[in-house]
Image 1: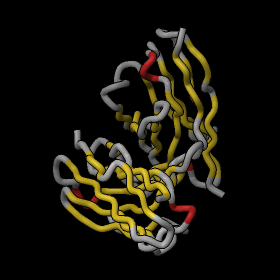
Image 2: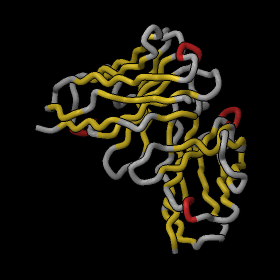
Image 3: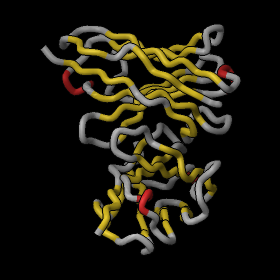
Length: 121
Length: 107
């Protein structure tokens, strides 16, 4: 069964840092690009970042560029999102998602359940 | 950035009725790189349609997608009770973006 399980969310003060993890199972992790998508309370979906299967290519939404870093460890089948200089507007549920197909930018065919990040003093 | 505008914002229908949801892009979406997702409260989104018209694995055939260029449509032929949810379109021809969502509610 293909599964994604996020962890690492929590309450952090503005300006602080947090690292999210996403453990993948049931598929060949290094074959697929992966993404992070977030959803602020009561709002719609916002794509945050993507990383290629090899980890050599990354891409970010303008709203997080320079503050967030996406990475992956294929030996651990784990995706990461390092979030620095956090702001109140980063408060959201963060989902990791597997890209369908073999393109870097793709549709997302498997989603985790999400982890909640709250940025507040 | 390609902006996706979904309409209507809310669709009030009864079970058994047909639902037609629209997604309009600010510029042409390359290679029909358009997907649709369903999201229920407290749950992650679920992929319904990719490539504008291909159903994802396990998706019932009452869900269908159509369109190209800048205009795309998700049709639910006969609403089942479990179909009442929020639906999002997403383009992935370039840096991914989502529409703001259409809520399908019980009339």
